[in-house]
Image 1 (cartoon, helix red, strand yellow):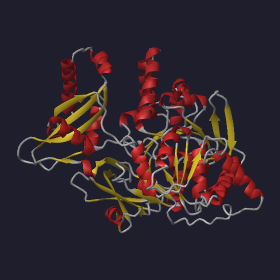
Image 2 (cartoon, rainbow, N blue to C red):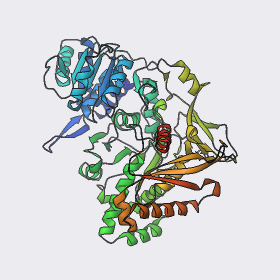
Image 3 (tube, rainbow, N blue to C red):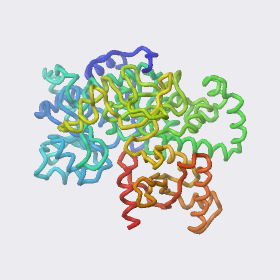
Image 4 (cartoon, rainbow, N blue to C red):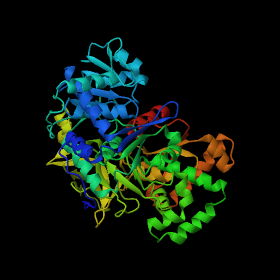
Length: 572
C-alpha cells in the first residue's frame, strides 16, 4: 500500500467534488477546444459547473429523475458535461463503447433499459435505427451537435439554455439533489460479446476513493494540461483523464487522433498524459527517427550512460532537445491498460521523462496500483494505492499467485448477476484473475492472466503475455499470440507455438528479403534467437505467419479463446 505523498481534497461524491473544486479553481481554464477552422476557445471550471447544473435541471424536467441515460460519442467536453449532469443528481449514466457495431449497440441499449441517449453526429444514423426497436425503453434522443430541437430530437445546447432559465425561475431540484454515494450510479459493460459482457455497477464512493488516492500520490496540480486520447467510455480515461483533471482543477485538451499525438503535445504544451503502451512506443519511435535523421543516436546513447545516475531534473536539461520534440512541458506520462515494455520505460527515464506504470480493472474504478515519480521500479506496476490492500493467493514455488484486492474502489458487483459477482468477490476481496509477484517492498509485478496460463507436462507454467512481449520486439512484428499445441494423444504433451502478425514492407526492408519463404526463414531465425535466451521448456516450436490482425476487444486486448478457435478452424 502506497503512502500518501501530497495533500488531497476530501470528497464524498462527484457532486461534492464539483462544488468544492469549483470554489477553488472556478476561474481557471477547464477545457481548451479547437474548432474546424483551427481556432481555439476556452471554457472555465465555473462555466463547466454552470452547464452541468443547467443540463441536469433540464433532464429532471424531462422526467428523467432516477432513470438510466446513455452516452455515445468521441472524446469531447460535451460528453463530459453529460456524464456529470446525469450522475450528479439526475440518474444513472451508461457510457457506451463507440467502437461497437450497430447490432451490439442495439443489444446493450435493450439490456441496460436506458430511457434517453446522448449521441454525437457520427452515430446519428445508428441511433435512429435503434430507437425504432420494440425491445428497448428509449424515449428521448439528444444530440450533442444540433443547435435546436428538431424532428423529435433534442439539442443538448438548447437543453442547457432551458435548464438555465428554469434555475433562474427558482427550480432547484437538481441543485438540491442528494447523492447516495454507495448506490449504483454508473453502469459499465465489460469488453466481450454483448451476450457475455457483464455490467459493472459503480458508485460515487468507488470513483471518488480512486480520485483521492491518485491525487495523493501523483504530482498533478491546477497548473497542468492533460491530453485526452483514450476512448472516454473506458474507465481508465474516464477516471484518470476526465474526472481527475476536474478534481485537480487542471485543463483538458483533446487529441486530434493517434497520428497527431506528438503534434498535440507540442501544440497544447501538454504536461500530463494517461495512455496505453503502444502510444508511448510510437512516441519513442518518432523521437528515435528524428535523432537518426540528425545523426545523433550514438551521441544520445553516450549521454544516457554518462548521466544515468543523475537526477531526473539534470537529465531533463541534458536532453532538452528531445523534450522539445514533445513540447518541452511534459512532466508525467502514465501508462496503463496493458504491460509497458521495461526497456521502453527505462529509455524514457534515461532521457529525463517521468513515466509511471499503473494497473487496474473496470471492476476497481479502475486504479489498483501505480508507480510514482518518487517510488517506482522498472517493470513494476508500483504499489497498491493508499486505500487499497493487495495480496496473492495460491502462490506457487516461483512466488507467483493470483492478485486479489480490497478497498473502497471495488465495484458494488455485476448488475443483475449475483452468480458472477460471488465468483470474483469473496469475503470482501476482489479476485482480479491476474497472476503476479509482490516483492518485499510491496512492488507488484504482473505476470499474466490466470485463464491464459499454459501448463506443460512437467508442471511448468508459461505466461503467454511475457513471451509475446519478447516476440513483439522483433522488427516487423506488429503483434503475436502464444498458444499451446497438443503434440500427441497425451493431452498434457503441450508444445509452445506462436502466431505472428507481421508488416511485409517493414520485414522486407529490414532484412533485405523478398519472397514469402525468405520472410518465413528470417522470422524463424529471430524466434530461434529468442529461444536461446530462455529455458528449453519455454522454447517456441511452431510458427504461423499472417498479415491479418488478431481478434481483439474494442479496448485492444487479445481475445484468446477466439484466436485459438480461429487457428483450429484454419487447420481443419
